[in-house]
Length: 263
Image 1 (cartoon, one colour):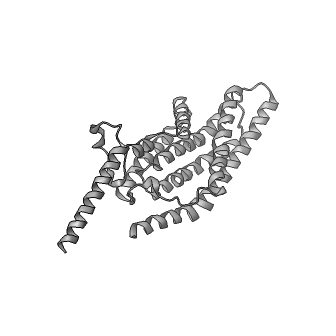
Image 2 (cartoon, rainbow, N blue to C red):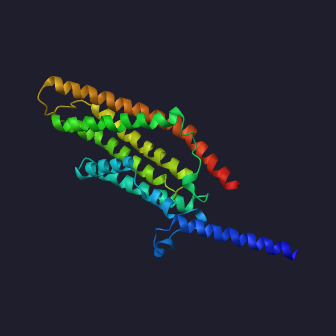
Image 3 (cartoon, helix red, strand yellow):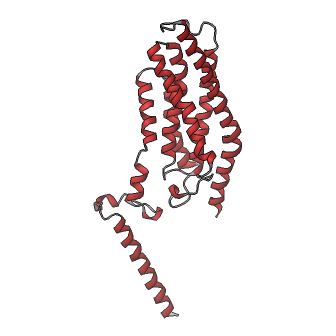
């Protein structure tokens, strides 16, 4: 019995020494003063921390759009406050309502298969119809001096760019699956109202009267383009929220989270 206990203790010591050796090897280029901020019990190494702290190219582009729109005065104080509130709120939810469960949340299996066509093509299509085309429309509006068109489309673009940026934050190892789902649901619900306003402005009486472009044909072209773009975004993002996010994505994410919590 004593021999078995001694062997168990020796095996445990060897495992601890091996763990320390691997941890040191993974962080051999890091000053010792920095290692005290890591949490190896959660699987953290300097490599995982570096990956979590890196900002992706997509996030960087979204941040640039946010800053440009904010600095140009095209964004209302209410929309700015909404973005700031959402960032603070996800930290509150993560702390008190949906804390991380696994040792390394960044390694959690996704709710949907990332190799499926829907998962790969859906965000690309959403980015094209929701960001690329409206940004091109706004840029053309500057050239054509279409102030009304710019003001109508800007809130949606700003909020979608903000959503893309906050999405990147939520998908770090600091947040659990429900937080990652909360971000698109929260922002989509807000953007539905801005899209309704965009469509209403496009079809309002007297819209386009202050158009500063050079010809009537150019004004008609922009008016038609703005209307189709506003309608397409309203239909797409409303369908995404009420046809996918709320009835499918949200329940599966919560089921996955609470199933892991009870294990």
